[in-house]
Image 1 (cartoon, rainbow, N blue to C red):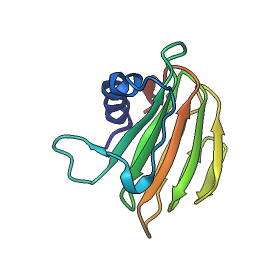
Image 2: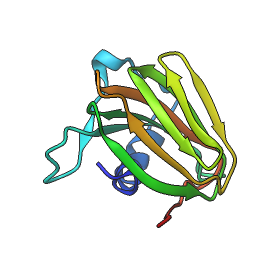
Image 3: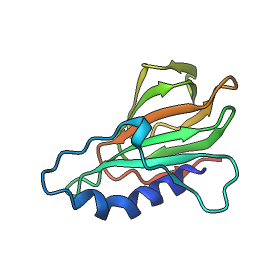
Image 4: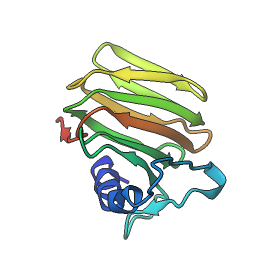
Length: 139
């Protein structure tokens, strides 16, 4: 699943998330309602966890199959990644960094990145942006 599609899916789910009157949002992995891209055969999925109407920031859970690659891109806002299961490789201009389950990464706005899920197992990770997460492809 392309990251842009996950962001679109998240935007579509914002109205449902905003309908919770208490403001508390709790999602457990075993109860998460994953959204899949129509026509996608790779099994990638996402769950909108929270959206901030004031800043445009969002929080997502993303699940990628083993070996999946997210093409080079950057965002207009700061991004945080926490790996829940599996291992991600974060390909940066400064070199490759491995993020294992429980690991964290902070990427400043406009940091060019490419993510790949390890070959051994699927990856589940939390993504958070402190502003609108507009994604821009990099060739």
